[in-house]
Amino acid sequence: MNTEETLLCLAIALLGGLLMSRLAKVVNLPAVTAYLITGLLLGPFVIGRFGVLGLGFTSLEIVDSLKILSQVALGFIAFAIGNEFRLSQLKVMGKQAVTVGILQAVGTTILVDAALIVTHIIDPGIISLSSAVTLGSIAAATAPAATLMVVKQYKADGPLTKLLLMVVAIDDAVGLVLFSVSFGVANALESGAVNVTSVLVEPLVEIVLSLLLGILAGYILNFLEVYFHSRSKRMSLSISFVLLTVGISMMEFDVGGVHVGFSLLLVCMMMGTVFCNVCETSEELMGRVDRWTSPVSILFFILSGAELDLRILSNPVVLLIGIIYIISRCAGKYYGAFISCKMTHCSEAITAHLGITLFPQAGVALGMALTAANLGDGAVIRNVVLFSVLIYELVGPTLTKISLTKAGEIIPEARRSARTPNEAR
Image: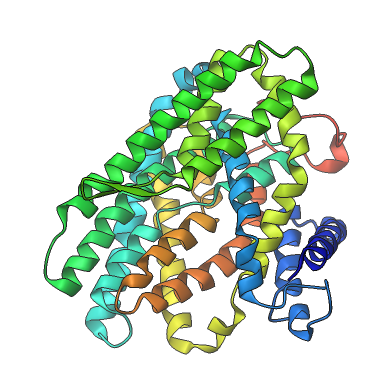
């Protein structure tokens, strides 16, 4: 598409998403679900296939060409999640967040691995052992974007919400390690040789460098903020730093035979964490940045819906593996969170509802699936993840909303003003 068609397409997509969110409100669905459905309708398999100028995305390649918008949106989402790691909160539930974040992710990987390996043993033609091991690690990842969007839309607040946002952030670091190790094992199963560098060294280097870059960016941002007194200029400075860290995070290079890269989510999350703990006015600035980036977040979900490949629904093998993957992953997330919450003495409300709020899965998992495409049947992994994302993203936000409501951390809209935040309970 040329520039005019791109702008027209994005404008119509944004308008369509906003209108669809009004319909979603009538049937009591979260706005994020409306945005995903909008993307699905405007995608290359529904309206986009008619090829009308500016109306819909006519191919998956066009959706992929707008990837920069999704990367920027993820950067701001991670930056906002970092705001939840304030020292006051970490002192209260930091130990719980780390324990639950690690145990539920590892438990989910083990359970999904077991289910898919049994499937392989029953019929090796359905799924290879290397794909089974890789899919198990991908299952650990949770979508921070959908979760944060639901929390913000309904102004959820309380112990469950705070712990949820911390666990979702920790999930990404744990998931990165699990995927790197599992992918290394999968490569070894196919090639017969274990590459220690790719299995252990590279994921640890990526995590350490990402955290260090985020810490450095957070301190520099705070240092420069004092030179600007205008609220609009300070907001602009914060936005520029998020864009800067997103750009740096997308860089990759090799040093001494080690492939070096960064995790966009970890970098921006750590920058937000450092900034919110060292800057006295961070709360106000975070709120202003959030309002400025709202349209970008909406487009992120619309593009996410548009890139869902509906052709996978015609493949019975993908559907079978996908159903096994979804059921075992949901069981892993729910019971992993339930058991770890019991171990860390969380409240009954958190123990009962946290697992369900961890069901959504999207961008991080798709990125892992793209990396796994190098395996012998990497296409199967990608299609299974696409199928699960289709289900999780359409159903997950609603389940998150229901769980937070049952926990008493979302007040029904009829009983509060849309402009008034919930009181923490």
